[in-house]
Structure formats: structure tokens, C-alpha cells
Length: 243
Image 1: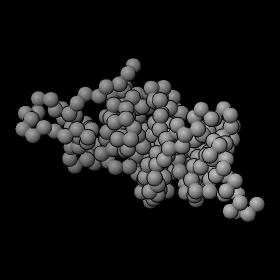
Image 2: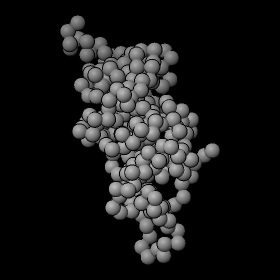
Image 3: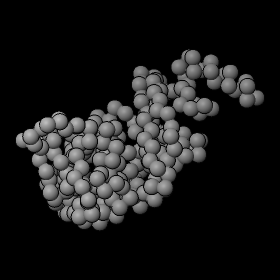
Image 4: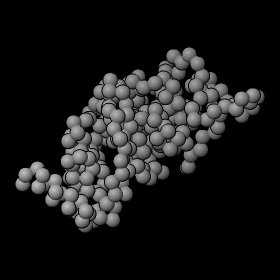
């Protein structure tokens, strides 16, 4: 078929809900079992999609947390960390969200030793390892259900993190994010993992809020504010997790 004939035929199949378009010139075959959701699970096609676009990636945040055993995370959004600004999109009932990480950092942390694989009937998808998932969640906490959501992930999977690997990867992330993770690991009782991050707290020059989304009230006497000296963090509100 000529390119124009193929495009016309593909568009007819899209209208009949037998194909779906994930990106320009990238089509998904909708099998009968996928029709209720409008498209197959993104884990089945994210790898060829990113290869089609020539962009490296890793599945991370809440979807990665669920993969590693954080049962509290429904992972309604399929979150992918990439070194390029990409627009998020919805296909059928699936919502894909692309989270930007600076290329120089992405290149250093997106290594096979620090990644895992989601196996599917069609192949595999690259997913952040446990340590990278924890750091991504705390770095991009606003996309991971906030500090409470991250605390839940830390409680659920933090004990599985290798302390030495966690400390090595933490060197590529902002010091404040690492300190927040250390505090949440302490809170969850994962002592060996939190201890591996203690040297980062020693480099801190100022206190940072545990939750930057909470703005302190002007004139507050400080009654509801706690200073965590160990991690050099200001705690404006208690963290809530399910047990």
C-alpha cells in the first residue's frame, strides 16, 4: 500500500475502534478484550512507542511502586520519566503522564543496573528499580499523591531497597529530596535504608519543609511546627499512612 492509502485505511479502522492512535504514525491494534478500556495496557506498548520516538524512558512513580508491591497504589495514571518535555495524553481509559528529568541526570541514573522489567505477553517495559522508584516519588511528590502518598510508598517498599545502592543513586538527586526520603524511611522504621542517607543531611545548610506544598501561616507562633534536626526539615503537618 502507498503511505496515503495506509493512512486512510488506518483512520477507517480507528473510527471503527479496531485501531487506536497513541502518537502520529503509531497505531495500536485493539483486541476484543481491550475494547472496554479503549486500548491495551500501556505496559504492553510503551517500549515500542518510545523506540518509535527515539527517546529513552523508564516507568516510575506510582505505577512502578505498584509493580514493586505497594498495594495501596491503584496507579490510575501510567507515569513515565523521560529526558524530554512530552505532552501527556489519554488513550481510551488509560492516562499517560510524562515526567521530565534533566537529560544529564536522566542519562546517569537510567542505567540497566538500576532498572527492572515489567514482563508482558508482548515483550517488556523498562521500570525504575526500587531505589530509583523511591527517589523519583519523593523528587516528584506532587505527581505521586503528595507527601502522604509518598510516605505510603516508602512504608510499603522501603525495606526492599538496597542501602548502598540507594545512597549511590541519591547523589544524583537534590539534597532536600534525599533528606525527605530519609525522614520518611525513619518514620516507616526502615532504619538501615535511612542510615545510608544520613551523610546527606550533614551537608544541609538550611531547613527545608517536609511538604513544600504547605505554606506556613504568617505570624504562626510555631506551636504546630516541628523542627527535625536530624534531617534538617520543618514538619508543618503530620504524615498519614495506612497500616
